[in-house]
Length: 312
Image (cartoon, rainbow, N blue to C red; front, side):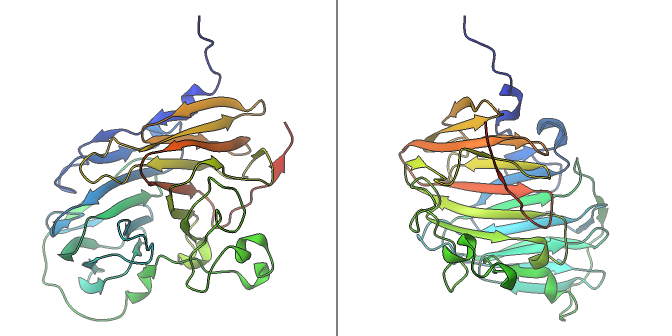
């Protein structure tokens, strides 16, 4: 008889379903706190495959929590290339902002926003969202004429890694190139770690209490040479995601993750989320095989990211 794993409830397959009415035309990964072991946020992930309008399909929205809308490329081998032109309306003014590089749109609680329009698309792009509340809530607002201006321009941030001057001599800085892209596998962090990663912190996000990543991964091996397990003082989720726009349930790799002080082993090869409560030991993480490159997102509910190594 197979042994029941103590932490099986913290390693879950991603849920694909229709988003709340009026947000997106296609099903996507959508998970809220009740699906994430009480993690105090909600998360969605999907692909944009043709010019469209979304979030919402019509009019605009207001949320009672902070939200982040992320748009990134993945097909060119260059994490800094989006391959699309996207616009969003922000504020009571419906101020329109246009971008064509990988970006995150910051939505402070109470700010009217939307719709998002994908005006030009050279190739499919990934769009994921992070809502800093346990479940999706929104008030719909009627359609109004859009305007131009720069009042809300600070809410559109490039998806690049900025190095804190206080950490300029750390290993973190040493794996980050002059364009703001991290290359941990190339620079020896661990052979299975990311080919290209960008990481944004609260200081990059107008002080929002979150830090998160977007990374492209294609290699086998252990992710970290520096230790076996680490912890964080805040909640975190680890999101393992495929890059096939025609099959959101495909990961293209198999990974092994240790959970808890005894490194309880969990193996998966479909899109998966690992939930790490405050102070919970996790890792080592090993990529066992890769058929196709895959995506990985860290979401941690703090503006900073402390991760001390711990002994078993």
